[in-house]
Amino acid sequence: MAGHDRANAGRGRSGVELALPLPDGAASGYLALPASGRGRGVLVFHEAWGLLDPIRDACDRLARSGFAALAPDLYAGRSSDEIEGAVALMNQLTPERAGMLVDASVEALLRSEACEGARIGALGYCMGGQLALFAACRSPRIAAAVDFYGSFPGLPLELAKCRAAVLAIFAERDAYVPAAQVESLRAELARAGVRASVRVQPGVAHAFMNESRPDVFDAAAAAAGWSALLAFLRAELA
Image (cartoon, rainbow, N blue to C red; front, side, top):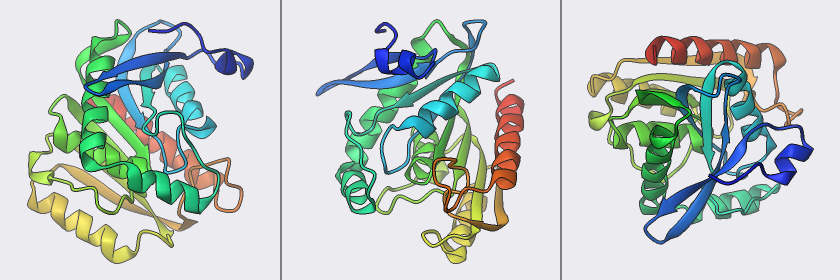
Protein backbone atom coordinates (compact mmCIF):
# COMPACT_ATOMS: atom_id res chain seq x y z
CA MET A 1 0.00 0.00 0.00
CA ALA A 2 1.32 3.43 -0.91
CA GLY A 3 1.29 6.39 1.43
CA HIS A 4 -1.34 9.10 1.40
CA ASP A 5 -1.74 10.65 -2.04
CA ARG A 6 -0.95 14.38 -1.97
CA ALA A 7 -3.95 15.26 -4.14
CA ASN A 8 -6.21 13.39 -1.77
CA ALA A 9 -4.65 15.09 1.24
CA GLY A 10 -5.16 18.45 -0.43
CA ARG A 11 -8.87 17.74 -0.65
CA GLY A 12 -8.98 16.70 2.99
CA ARG A 13 -9.27 13.01 2.16
CA SER A 14 -8.08 10.34 4.53
CA GLY A 15 -7.92 7.53 1.95
CA VAL A 16 -4.80 6.02 0.45
CA GLU A 17 -3.80 4.77 -2.97
CA LEU A 18 -3.60 0.99 -3.11
CA ALA A 19 -1.67 -1.06 -5.69
CA LEU A 20 -3.62 -3.80 -7.46
CA PRO A 21 -1.29 -6.43 -8.97
CA LEU A 22 -2.38 -7.66 -12.40
CA PRO A 23 -0.88 -10.30 -14.70
CA ASP A 24 0.06 -7.56 -17.18
CA GLY A 25 1.21 -4.94 -14.67
CA ALA A 26 -0.02 -3.00 -11.66
CA ALA A 27 -3.24 -1.05 -11.42
CA SER A 28 -4.35 1.18 -8.58
CA GLY A 29 -7.34 2.09 -6.48
CA TYR A 30 -8.52 4.42 -3.74
CA LEU A 31 -9.06 2.86 -0.30
CA ALA A 32 -10.95 4.76 2.40
CA LEU A 33 -11.03 3.42 5.95
CA PRO A 34 -13.31 4.00 8.93
CA ALA A 35 -11.97 5.79 11.99
CA SER A 36 -11.48 2.44 13.70
CA GLY A 37 -9.16 1.36 10.89
CA ARG A 38 -11.24 -1.74 10.10
CA GLY A 39 -14.66 -2.49 8.64
CA ARG A 40 -16.65 -4.69 6.30
CA GLY A 41 -15.25 -4.41 2.80
CA VAL A 42 -17.03 -2.82 -0.15
CA LEU A 43 -15.80 -2.42 -3.72
CA VAL A 44 -16.98 0.78 -5.44
CA PHE A 45 -16.96 0.79 -9.26
CA HIS A 46 -16.81 4.11 -11.03
CA GLU A 47 -18.90 5.49 -13.88
CA ALA A 48 -17.80 5.76 -17.49
CA TRP A 49 -16.14 9.12 -16.70
CA GLY A 50 -13.37 7.45 -14.67
CA LEU A 51 -12.22 7.42 -11.06
CA LEU A 52 -13.20 11.01 -10.23
CA ASP A 53 -14.14 12.89 -7.07
CA PRO A 54 -17.74 11.61 -6.78
CA ILE A 55 -16.49 8.03 -6.47
CA ARG A 56 -13.81 8.96 -3.95
CA ASP A 57 -16.55 10.88 -2.11
CA ALA A 58 -18.67 7.71 -2.03
CA CYS A 59 -15.73 5.76 -0.58
CA ASP A 60 -15.20 8.43 2.06
CA ARG A 61 -18.90 8.37 2.99
CA LEU A 62 -18.84 4.59 3.28
CA ALA A 63 -15.78 4.84 5.51
CA ARG A 64 -17.56 7.32 7.76
CA SER A 65 -20.34 4.73 8.02
CA GLY A 66 -17.90 2.05 9.15
CA PHE A 67 -16.95 0.31 5.89
CA ALA A 68 -13.56 -0.23 4.25
CA ALA A 69 -14.23 0.98 0.70
CA LEU A 70 -11.98 0.35 -2.30
CA ALA A 71 -12.57 1.96 -5.71
CA PRO A 72 -10.37 0.39 -8.41
CA ASP A 73 -9.19 2.66 -11.21
CA LEU A 74 -10.53 0.82 -14.26
CA TYR A 75 -8.93 3.22 -16.75
CA ALA A 76 -5.33 3.35 -15.45
CA GLY A 77 -5.48 7.04 -14.57
CA ARG A 78 -7.45 8.20 -17.59
CA SER A 79 -10.77 10.03 -17.39
CA SER A 80 -13.02 12.27 -19.44
CA ASP A 81 -15.53 15.02 -18.71
CA GLU A 82 -17.13 14.70 -22.17
CA ILE A 83 -19.59 11.99 -23.11
CA GLU A 84 -17.74 11.00 -26.29
CA GLY A 85 -14.50 10.49 -24.40
CA ALA A 86 -16.22 8.60 -21.60
CA VAL A 87 -17.89 6.23 -24.06
CA ALA A 88 -14.55 5.65 -25.80
CA LEU A 89 -12.90 4.76 -22.48
CA MET A 90 -15.77 2.46 -21.55
CA ASN A 91 -15.56 0.67 -24.89
CA GLN A 92 -11.86 0.01 -24.33
CA LEU A 93 -12.64 -1.85 -21.09
CA THR A 94 -13.04 -5.39 -22.41
CA PRO A 95 -14.75 -8.13 -20.38
CA GLU A 96 -11.36 -9.82 -20.03
CA ARG A 97 -9.73 -6.68 -18.63
CA ALA A 98 -12.73 -6.02 -16.39
CA GLY A 99 -12.47 -9.58 -15.07
CA MET A 100 -8.79 -9.16 -14.21
CA LEU A 101 -9.49 -5.89 -12.41
CA VAL A 102 -12.40 -7.40 -10.47
CA ASP A 103 -10.29 -10.37 -9.39
CA ALA A 104 -7.40 -8.14 -8.31
CA SER A 105 -9.74 -5.79 -6.43
CA VAL A 106 -11.48 -8.62 -4.56
CA GLU A 107 -8.14 -10.10 -3.54
CA ALA A 108 -6.64 -6.75 -2.54
CA LEU A 109 -9.60 -5.82 -0.37
CA LEU A 110 -9.89 -9.20 1.32
CA ARG A 111 -6.13 -9.33 1.99
CA SER A 112 -6.13 -5.84 3.47
CA GLU A 113 -5.82 -5.74 7.26
CA ALA A 114 -8.60 -3.15 7.16
CA CYS A 115 -11.18 -5.61 5.83
CA GLU A 116 -13.27 -7.56 8.33
CA GLY A 117 -15.04 -10.78 7.41
CA ALA A 118 -14.65 -13.33 4.63
CA ARG A 119 -17.11 -11.74 2.19
CA ILE A 120 -17.51 -8.25 0.81
CA GLY A 121 -19.97 -5.99 -0.97
CA ALA A 122 -19.89 -4.38 -4.42
CA LEU A 123 -21.44 -1.05 -5.40
CA GLY A 124 -21.50 0.90 -8.61
CA TYR A 125 -23.15 3.64 -10.64
CA CYS A 126 -24.04 3.48 -14.36
CA MET A 127 -21.17 1.50 -15.93
CA GLY A 128 -20.05 0.68 -12.40
CA GLY A 129 -23.51 -0.61 -11.50
CA GLN A 130 -23.27 -3.23 -14.22
CA LEU A 131 -19.73 -4.00 -13.04
CA ALA A 132 -21.01 -4.58 -9.51
CA LEU A 133 -23.33 -7.28 -10.88
CA PHE A 134 -20.55 -8.62 -13.11
CA ALA A 135 -18.27 -8.89 -10.07
CA ALA A 136 -20.96 -10.68 -8.05
CA CYS A 137 -21.37 -13.20 -10.87
CA ARG A 138 -17.62 -13.70 -11.03
CA SER A 139 -16.70 -13.96 -7.36
CA PRO A 140 -18.47 -15.98 -4.64
CA ARG A 141 -16.66 -13.77 -2.11
CA ILE A 142 -19.14 -10.98 -2.91
CA ALA A 143 -22.20 -11.31 -0.70
CA ALA A 144 -24.05 -8.10 -1.63
CA ALA A 145 -24.20 -6.12 -4.87
CA VAL A 146 -25.75 -2.66 -5.28
CA ASP A 147 -26.48 -1.49 -8.83
CA PHE A 148 -27.50 2.13 -9.37
CA TYR A 149 -28.92 2.52 -12.91
CA GLY A 150 -26.36 0.08 -14.32
CA SER A 151 -25.57 0.31 -18.03
CA PHE A 152 -22.55 -1.21 -19.77
CA PRO A 153 -23.44 -2.61 -23.22
CA GLY A 154 -21.40 -5.65 -24.13
CA LEU A 155 -20.51 -6.71 -20.59
CA PRO A 156 -21.96 -10.20 -20.07
CA LEU A 157 -23.72 -11.16 -16.85
CA GLU A 158 -23.79 -14.85 -15.90
CA LEU A 159 -26.49 -14.41 -13.29
CA ALA A 160 -26.76 -18.15 -12.70
CA LYS A 161 -23.34 -17.87 -11.00
CA CYS A 162 -24.37 -14.99 -8.73
CA ARG A 163 -24.42 -15.96 -5.04
CA ALA A 164 -24.87 -12.41 -3.79
CA ALA A 165 -28.03 -10.62 -2.76
CA VAL A 166 -28.77 -7.76 -5.17
CA LEU A 167 -30.23 -4.29 -4.71
CA ALA A 168 -30.82 -2.51 -8.04
CA ILE A 169 -32.21 1.02 -8.18
CA PHE A 170 -33.08 2.66 -11.49
CA ALA A 171 -34.49 6.02 -12.57
CA GLU A 172 -37.99 6.42 -13.97
CA ARG A 173 -36.86 9.04 -16.52
CA ASP A 174 -33.63 7.33 -17.61
CA ALA A 175 -32.52 8.18 -21.15
CA TYR A 176 -29.95 5.36 -21.14
CA VAL A 177 -31.72 2.49 -19.38
CA PRO A 178 -35.27 2.01 -20.71
CA ALA A 179 -38.02 0.48 -18.58
CA ALA A 180 -37.96 -2.68 -20.71
CA GLN A 181 -34.30 -3.23 -19.80
CA VAL A 182 -35.09 -2.87 -16.09
CA GLU A 183 -37.91 -5.40 -16.37
CA SER A 184 -35.65 -7.77 -18.30
CA LEU A 185 -33.06 -7.62 -15.53
CA ARG A 186 -35.76 -8.23 -12.91
CA ALA A 187 -36.94 -11.33 -14.81
CA GLU A 188 -33.41 -12.64 -15.38
CA LEU A 189 -32.54 -12.30 -11.70
CA ALA A 190 -35.72 -14.20 -10.78
CA ARG A 191 -34.99 -16.97 -13.29
CA ALA A 192 -31.48 -17.32 -11.90
CA GLY A 193 -32.82 -17.63 -8.36
CA VAL A 194 -30.98 -14.52 -7.18
CA ARG A 195 -32.42 -12.87 -4.08
CA ALA A 196 -32.97 -9.39 -5.46
CA SER A 197 -34.83 -6.13 -4.96
CA VAL A 198 -35.21 -4.14 -8.19
CA ARG A 199 -36.66 -0.66 -7.69
CA VAL A 200 -37.47 2.29 -9.91
CA GLN A 201 -37.13 5.74 -8.33
CA PRO A 202 -40.02 7.88 -9.62
CA GLY A 203 -39.53 11.26 -11.23
CA VAL A 204 -35.73 11.21 -11.54
CA ALA A 205 -33.22 10.90 -14.37
CA HIS A 206 -30.09 8.83 -14.92
CA ALA A 207 -27.26 9.74 -12.51
CA PHE A 208 -29.62 11.18 -9.91
CA MET A 209 -27.14 10.08 -7.20
CA ASN A 210 -24.30 12.20 -8.61
CA GLU A 211 -24.08 15.53 -6.79
CA SER A 212 -21.52 16.82 -9.31
CA ARG A 213 -24.24 16.67 -11.99
CA PRO A 214 -26.67 19.47 -11.01
CA ASP A 215 -28.65 18.90 -14.22
CA VAL A 216 -29.82 15.49 -12.95
CA PHE A 217 -28.94 15.29 -9.24
CA ASP A 218 -31.95 14.86 -6.97
CA ALA A 219 -31.13 15.45 -3.30
CA ALA A 220 -34.16 13.66 -1.86
CA ALA A 221 -33.82 10.62 -4.12
CA ALA A 222 -30.07 10.49 -3.53
CA ALA A 223 -30.55 10.56 0.24
CA ALA A 224 -33.12 7.77 -0.01
CA GLY A 225 -30.80 5.75 -2.25
CA TRP A 226 -27.88 6.17 0.14
CA SER A 227 -29.99 5.10 3.12
CA ALA A 228 -31.17 2.05 1.17
CA LEU A 229 -27.66 0.98 0.21
CA LEU A 230 -26.34 1.38 3.77
CA ALA A 231 -29.19 -0.66 5.22
CA PHE A 232 -28.70 -3.33 2.56
CA LEU A 233 -24.93 -3.60 3.02
CA ARG A 234 -25.21 -3.68 6.81
CA ALA A 235 -27.79 -6.44 6.68
CA GLU A 236 -26.03 -8.58 4.07
CA LEU A 237 -22.48 -8.17 5.40
CA ALA A 238 -23.36 -8.57 9.09
